[in-house]
Image (cartoon, rainbow, N blue to C red; front, side):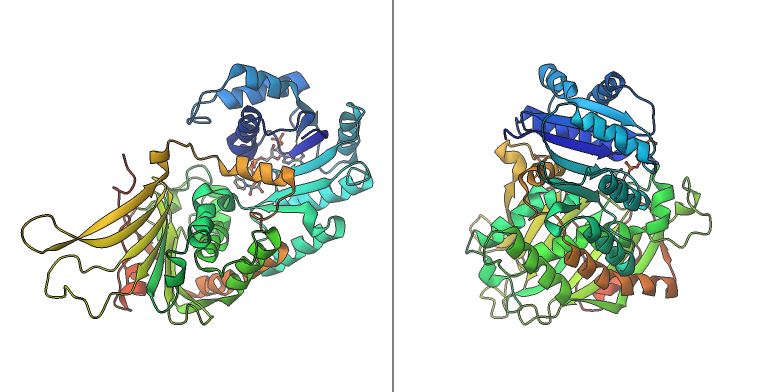
Length: 479
Ligand SMILES: NC(=O)c1ccc[n+]([C@@H]2O[C@H](COP(=O)([O-])OP(=O)(O)OC[C@H]3O[C@@H](n4cnc5c(N)ncnc54)[C@H](OP(=O)(O)O)[C@@H]3O)[C@@H](O)[C@H]2O)c1
């Protein structure tokens, strides 16, 4: 990429920038994916000079765990840091934008611009307004794109308002709503697994699929995020975005072409067909949550939810989808399991073993991979069956999985919105979630023991249909 490019990070001193953006910029630099003429401008209230911001960014890069997959190459870091600048000031004040304008003009050339809002959503209106007033939104010189992070609104109404606000300043093809889940390699691979092969896709329908299960569990509590988490809860924090994206990718129809328009259209279509079921819904809180830091001692907030849903289309008629997700659970694991129907004319029905249903498991994290459960003959003189697993494991391929932020920043640079959430999509997500949230206030919140897989009530959601939650296996792809 030869054109000059400016990335402006509002909130460059915050948590998101430290955890994700600065490390992702390093990864981009190391992979030679940043434009040659790039300028990165951080913004925050802290008074920092360019030199101090570079030192701060260097410290961020060298903190343990930031780059557990590979060590920092000092010459790459040095080259990146040279391109980093800082403007201090209050996002609500015009002076900041005048200073930013001066800073961006320093390289005297026209540049493409990307504004990354790694700051609070309450500040968006003032940011857009000031960028407009100071002419920084102008595309005379090159493209202008804006990236915003989840949460995109807190319900359908606020999401619509935010979409309207964005539309006042930007065209939809300038707006990148980032849900890092869509940048996950394991999630994107669901599309290639389904649509680049002809093996399983003909079987992903009501004739062959008994049901679908999703478990998204974390074995840790809310840590230092009490203030934020207690105002949203599990369903809004991960249900509205990550869970719905997983369902969409695993069950949407094949796009007619691999373009943003077609892929996004199919995700939206599926989301609109997804039906909330009010009578199969549980919200729960882990024991001890009320003693967590910054949590309201009377909080009615959910740290766990489970529900049943279904898709209102011919393909999946009568196929239930069961979802459970939450914090302080038995182990950290996210997986989608497609459970196939059992063969009623089973040739081996007289045998004891190997009678379990076939399963296709997308292991999103950890030990990422795709696993197929099937029956196999037990080696030996007798004809016995046992359940076996065929596994494709990313770790076996020795390719390290790129961080979703790297992937999505590259896409935003290239102008590819396929794995970003569009306005209609986020509204379809809230349309599904809002009735569930409304039901939360009318329901008794149940409690569960930290270290379990949630409350007994969550078991009833699936057991009432004669099915069971599948305990995610620790042995998949663990070498
Ligand atoms: N943290 C994550 O992992 C994560 C993940 C997904 C989405 N998000 C979203 O990303 C956004 C940022 O989250 P965060 O966790 O990074 O928050 P944070 O740690 O509190 O950081 C907020 C940033 O905004 C800056 N800021 C706040 N008010 C400002 C003002 N009036 N003028 C100038 N700068 C101001 C702060 O700069 P000063 O410190 O200099 O004031 C800081 O750099 C939120 O919308 C959040 O929901 C965060």
